[in-house]
Length: 318
Image (tube, rainbow, N blue to C red; front, side, top):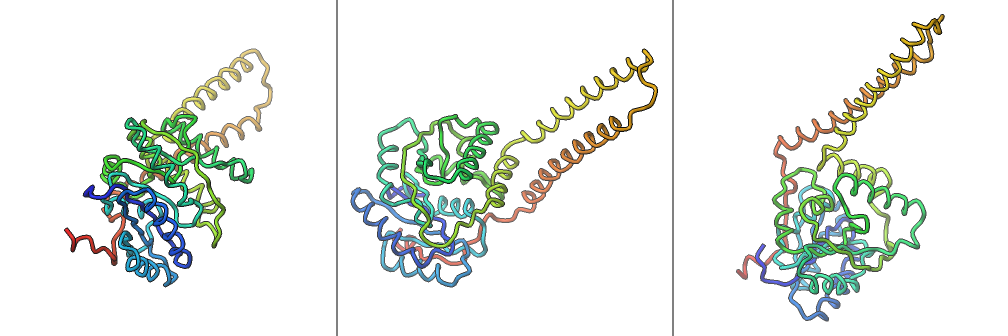
């Protein structure tokens, strides 16, 4: 990262070619109004539609501030974002989605919040969730609770993908070589100098979100397992409690046996105890297996992404 521009706006792109030009026109209009140097980095996450990459090529010819990178295979939003981090030159990096839910007109709020606070490393946009469906609100709260338990997220902090962060923090995130990075949890791990600014969030006007409930649940599970040993500790605590419970039950049955209170052995209690401990064992094996799978993936040394093509002309100017 060579900090010869003030702001780098990084947008992972997936099958958004039809409305990409409209998004860029709004970004260019807003950033030109701020009067600061900037660049827009579009990372095409191997969109299979045959439309998105040509749209990026056209945008790069039309707007000199736009730089496009086409990934060889689909890697996911987080790794595509890290690709943008590694290509960025700005003193401050802004990340936003390509689906128009993050209005470019809200960018000045992020910029102002960071510019006015020298003691802050990252500012997250906080969405107004009052109009969200109840199920989405519940999902957001569950995710926030998990981040609080595992990563110590402050209760009043909202972690979103609409954010601005300092170049030094982005460089540190890039150094984290995990095959499955989770940017929000990583930021919480690296710094506590975080803040929120309230921004608008629009409804997605085109297509459908790539994150269904299964995908969201998977991301929550990965964010917990990738950066924390909390599940293993939870299983250890559960095993300790189970052992204590088994000891208590054994002592109770022994006392009843000695006092003549048991004439016929209890079938139901035996089945319940066996079922309970079998479930605990299987849960523990499953969690250990998750960690082993991740260890194997890390040891294979597979790259997080590979760039197939680029529109970048910056190397010619340096």
